[in-house]
Length: 279
Image (cartoon, rainbow, N blue to C red):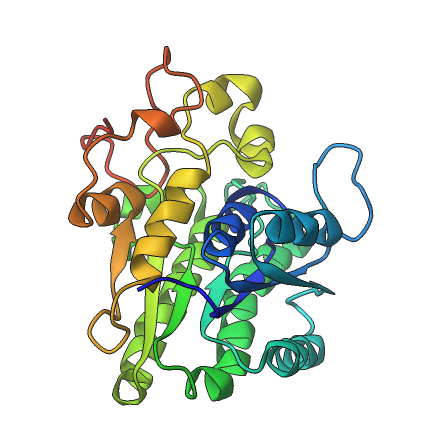
């Protein structure tokens, strides 16, 4: 099974993991909708919805660039409808758009607290729900959230409660919708990296260049997402998996090509048990 001719709706895909997923699908000849906020170049962040769309075309796919703020419920409905009309349907929804803030409970500003809940949890719910009517018509419909397994460890919550609530909220949307739409054959799964991933978000939030050197490239998440999309949606739903895990299940054993710096030890990501080293 390939993604040739399939249509993906990806939120926040102008850079990083979202763009990597888009480019992996494009190599199969997929149609990719990039629904993100960035339309003009940012002084510190590479990529816009337009540069992403061009990269998708260059990789062999078809692209549609849509400016979208996932906090705007009406705009989400319009964007999903426009995407479905443009490409004749939607087969895969990727909830990649996310905001990160690792402040503790007393330090975070309430407006920042609200922002990460609205983008992460609420945005995932809005986009997933909007895509459902179109996914019903797909032969192998997948919704994927880039969010962690629902491991109820109090120490993880205590370190950055506001962010944890928002990311676990994304996973809970997948958990609930997987069962709600199981009989209709729409798969809802969550994917999380075992190690930190070399993206701008990680660079700015977790420690600059040093953390980047201890990270893997976004392509590992793209390959893991691709492996999920190739599975039978009626049989593979309600799962919470790490990128390395899903790739091992697909038969891959060597992950060295994903290292940002082969001379550095890898940094295990948050929400992943530190006693499970990456290879």
